[in-house]
Image (tube, rainbow, N blue to C red; front, side, top):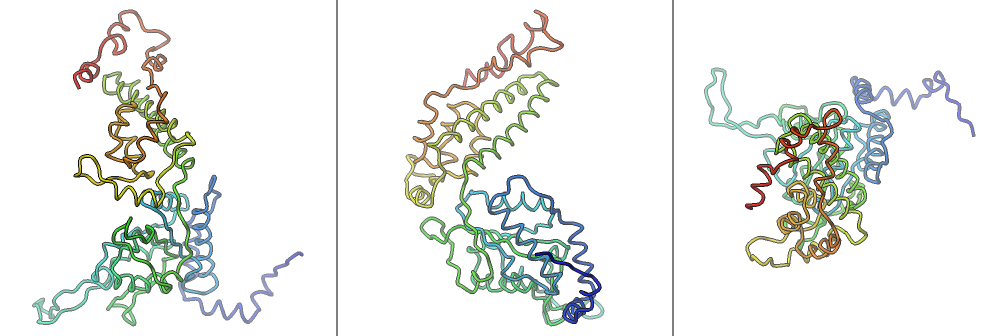
Length: 391
């Protein structure tokens, strides 16, 4: 079936005219500014979460074009996943790709002042304080007035119940209390929709989390977030390979002990990450694993056991020196002690990066002279080698 749109006929339609007349004076300008800012170009290999965020962006802009001030629950997204599963990184990456103005707030840290504006003594015409107080204008969310803005509320289910009630007005109506605005409420006209991120409501695993009621859940489309090992591996290896390029450039420029050490370490980190994350035996913690980890008492009986998440694994890779021994020695500081056996098994036949793998970097203009080779860091024991042997 072919659809033919005739502009003149559309403009004559009474319903269309009525919709256009209802648009606020500046609404069309805001839409144009949003469309000028936002990037709708295709994104390589989008996952289910970025697809949901793209849809929310379209729905929110459509609502403005159809004469509605907000898209309501049709656009808002609730990401539910364990700690360190990448919720924040996914949202930040998506916002950067789409060029939206992401306004990130931690809901668990909000108080009444953040939601309603602070208070201060009133003053008379001469600047003298009165015995009465006045509420200041609310500026906490002013950045949402920038066209093409999206609010990212982290840890929403850790916020005080009274704060959550105030946030509902912001999420649904895009308004905040403000004594200096008409009706005592300020409308944030650049605000498109809300992304909220929460841990599963499980007090045993995530202390301080609460179960949302239907009044709040009805404002969102819920999306589960799981730690995908292969997608995570691709992201981590790409980051480490970027680091390696910097290390190689630094070494070619300086050729000192530290540059050499960092080059070998980064190569080792890439090999370690590739080996572990490519193994079918490797898996991040499930909710049950996290619950068990919280209950596991460490040998030192002082420190609390960690969980095995993408965030913790990345921190461990960055902190280790690129060798198997150092990686395993530091495991308990960053990851679930219950999963150390799994990684040790994966690394059973693993061998560290051989310094000889850097032969190509030993030569300048083809070959080093015998004297140069004798005096280079490759031809003699370095200060780092001497220091390492004493550790």
